[in-house]
Amino acid sequence: MDFLDLARKRCSVRSFEKRPVEREKVERILEAARVAPSARNLQPWRFLVLDTPEALASLAKACRPFDAPLAVVVLGDNNEVWVRPYDAKDSLDIDTTIATDHMMLEAESLGLGSCWICSFRTGVLRSEFAIPGHLTPVNVLVLGYPSGPKKDPLRHGTERRPLSETVLYNHF
Image (cartoon, rainbow, N blue to C red; front, top):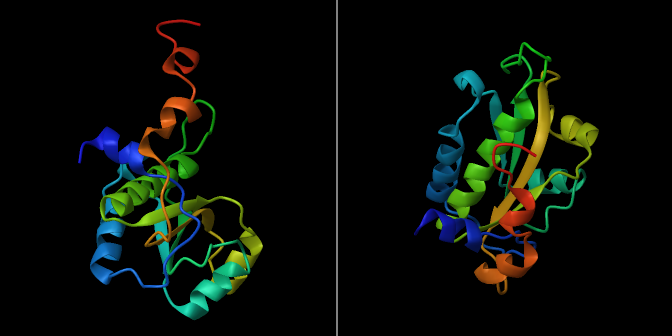
């Protein structure tokens, strides 16, 4: 599939079939994250894969996982992140988010749906999964087989701003 077609096809899924995601597909999704770019190639990410009923029930204490059969908590390692020397801005959120996006697109290419969750209780995640202090939960990605119809890939023509409103060339 052409990349732009894949990107247009992907949408947030909030209703999943009960069937589990095959281990081979999970591994491909994680591999897509592993090959994502990161600042200075430091790869400051860690991925906590949740695929048991007990782990998913614990996740549900921290956010709404939409009854997905699989979730990946994307964590950033504060000890391994690049920091821009000019203003001390670190790349933790950027690097982990690029990896998250790679996982979403790979999931879509495998016929799976996903929903990126940023609204979660960090303290609950930390306590439920014993997340060490040097790791920061950045994103939760829930995945599975979509239940019901997905959004029209052509929706971007009406749901997105045109490039003329968002792109500038050479100056403001």
